[in-house]
Image (cartoon, rainbow, N blue to C red; front, top):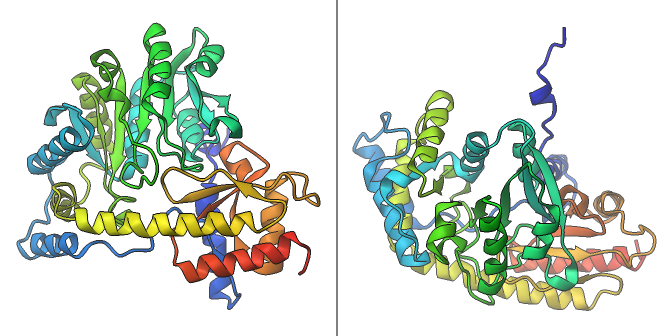
Length: 393
């Protein structure tokens, strides 16, 4: 008899976390390593949020809460979605989880039966296919092209649909490319989703980090698609609350939310009570000035980083609309022939720069670089990358 379940053996470690862990290990050993691998803002959580957490702690707000979240937090999320995204969700249509990863896990577990197919555009965030597979489903990858901004069109999804297709995953702004879907592009996806009665899983985690264009929540475009959309969001990226673990899902299907609540009640119950109190302040506008300050800093870093890439022969990048990643094309670095894993290994070994191979995101020939770090590190990183690409090390 096999000792471990096939289900758990099917899971792989997150490639982004693995690279970040390796970089930290090398740094701890005294190696000179610049890590651009983690998707984590380098800013501190805004003071107003931390003060609210301290207040909750001092008031003894340290007990169990309702699994889906305290009423005040659910109301704050509902108001935020209305104010920022033109989305009308009742608090009963929202559930708070331990980060957006758990929100996604709950959603996939609630909608996927064995053999169901989920359409995922490439390049994709590394966790999507793992969660689909763990839930008994089959990830079906929809290839995108750099010249189309790494975005899947309605026609691209249409070609991939079979009788087993259950859902489409959309990420805007994207991890790893930073691209944003326009209203017209989303409408082409809506047409296909409604025609085939598919769920839309809309990951909107980076919505506050937009530099060009306008962010649009797909569920806001018409009532029909709102009924079939599970909107995923959280506070990790927008207000630098990665370690606080707060994500949420919203859906008009109250039965689905209840099923997700049932699952969460059996595995983690509520997210920690102190984070819930702090999250209200993060959502109600109190931290908006801090959010804008971070957004402006990230935009400056993006612009400088893209300018530095333009000076290096053999690599290029499509300037991202949002998020804090560069998805760098390395196909013209001849020695590696687009092999992103070998490129990243050699880059780390020779010049101490840690990037994530594009193969982890389902698209070889590219590497992901996070610019969620200070400008001095970014500039030094490109000095080293330039030497590496030119063969001067």
